[in-house]
Image (tube, rainbow over all chains, first blue to last red):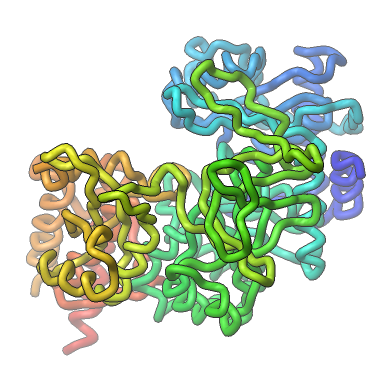
Length: 498
Length: 82
């Protein structure tokens, strides 16, 4: 299918329906098309009819931001999301790497003179000129992930990748229709956001956004309640904020409560399930390099506990056009039940990073027999005999303590068992004596660390007993809703290394 | 407990979390205090609940935008107990 033509058809078919609710204001598909057309006119004044250009968008919470994204796509160009609150130096690095010469900005938050591309201000710009849908296009967007070199790493995703994701997702959710109301909770510079706005716009459904500047977890509750949301996706960390109030929450309208971006704790989601009695719980997995989500586990809560490992819910089975291999250190496929690196092949996998730095390892390997290309995710996983995948942590996080290979998730699961389900995170660190050791951070933990260690000794081999146990009030969360390890290590450095 | 006493208690808690030099009035919102982020909001609410021996439900918490809202809620809960 030509994805953009399909979107155009959906916009026309649902012209009078609501496309967006942004800051409490509704915009119909008809109005949205006028905004897209306005931005497209502006873009073409700047780039002419040429396709294949890369154009940045400062992602504000405005209708013009979404209009700019579609104007770029419909004009056969590639979109690069830029965060309005990120430092200019970071945005300029992305502009430089992607080669963007123009940037849409509806709010002009950042001084245009500081950014190294020409600003196109599309605030309140609409047009009734018909949309031009260009079919010739390869690259759909470039997102940036943190790279080992310290520079952001550009991940270009092609139209073919995005189409495979959209088709794979929609095939799994045949019940979703234009009547649905989607809550988009992710930052637009994260690819998880595509589930929150691409899918509903494809269906002719309504997208509800989270206003910037508000406490996200509270706004999510408010919008879920007031707008009778039927589909939402957010990181499991949001549930941690909401957990103390689960008893006073109930969202009967929610049909799908989808998670992604972090390991999903069964205990946490089992409690949440009581707040969403009519919802199916699903857990998605997908590195940015493999286009949003490439595997998914869907279940009602009664079946969920059959698909749990180390307290973490399964990441399910691959999407239609995704192939999965789990391999050992020599790229040999491991038997079912054995852990190895999760490798992803198929139509959702990027062609390669934007710029390859000299010390980067090759992210791909090709299978000897079939000559198929697979992306090495850096994640550890295993597959059970039914083909369900289980995430076991990052390969990089895997520790070697006294010759034992240690997975943080195993320690966190044991801590949860002996500390009333409190949330914990285990990390490796080099202790005063210069040896690799384990530190565990536990949220709202008020017991003696030594007592906890005694209890852990009944569950774990001695190599897995943490040297340091640190109680914290709340886990710091980064922009993408994940636990921020660097902030933890900075704030508690005295306790870790002291 | 008078409104002023409630406010004084909240002010003391807030200064512990956001720093001694923080200016706090009933009209102060999260936009006025840089450190008042999602994480500190959770801590602030939990500490106020503990110190004043009250519990807020989620819809009450959503309604809180400034320190004065905490005072209103605690006053209301006090009246309900009478």
